[in-house]
Image 1 (tube, rainbow, N blue to C red):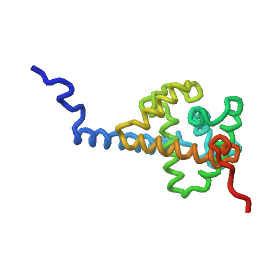
Image 2 (tube, rainbow, N blue to C red; image 1 turned 90 degrees about the horizontal axis):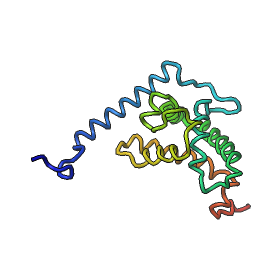
Image 3 (cartoon, rainbow, N blue to C red; image 1 turned 90 degrees about the vertical axis):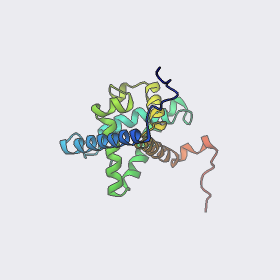
Image 4 (cartoon, rainbow, N blue to C red; image 1 turned 45 degrees about the horizontal axis):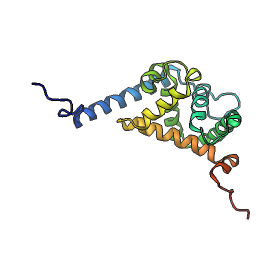
Length: 181
């Protein structure tokens, strides 16, 4: 008689560590491969200091989903543009090493060969539905791989800091703004 599924663990600790190590190596190789092959352009998009065209495609799809409930529907396009400007300003003031890591994250999310398996978004970001993007964010947030959880945390923090540093975001959360001196 075969043991039931509840009696046999799906992953042992050793198996999980091996899988995590393999996934880390895969992501690092994909990011390095993109950088070396020229897939990862370091040329900033028109009107931006740091963000590249590929980054903008991804971020324009993800930011509205992340800001849902914090921005009125009619104001979302302006909120996305303002958030992108604020994010670009923040990224422009990062250390070179932190900027490199952020670009690697954006490269992995932008390359079709890694985007599909890691996010579940098999087509381009601009064609992804809000539900598919929510599913990707939930998947990364609750992943058993610490690398994906860190990626989710980094994305969330970057976008939320870029949005909530803007004065127009303060009314929604009841913040009156900094005191006048």
